[in-house]
Length: 143
Image (tube, rainbow, N blue to C red; front, side, top):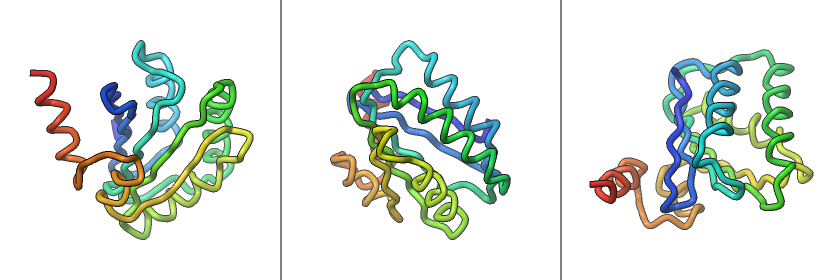
């Protein structure tokens, strides 16, 4: 699946990684799977890694429907949700801007776009310079 996620409880973080062509169906499937996951919690911060996408769906009506579906779930929560989009290519920056602009204040989402892993992790207050280092620390903790 081109959209995957990992819940990192130690950091109150959901790491979402997209690859290939970013499609609404894949996003809906991943978000639905996350919402049903037993470790899903209100207030999780989200790191959305768009650095590996090669293209994106251009049906903007469907993209807005995706944002609305996510927004309905997040709006029912008392805590704000922070979404940090890692976008380091022209296509990922376009996808991140579209996603960020799809959130309204009513959704309780703080959405920002960062160009580097270091900036994305720093904006989440994480002490790592790369996502790989973050994931390796989580892996070491599970041993």
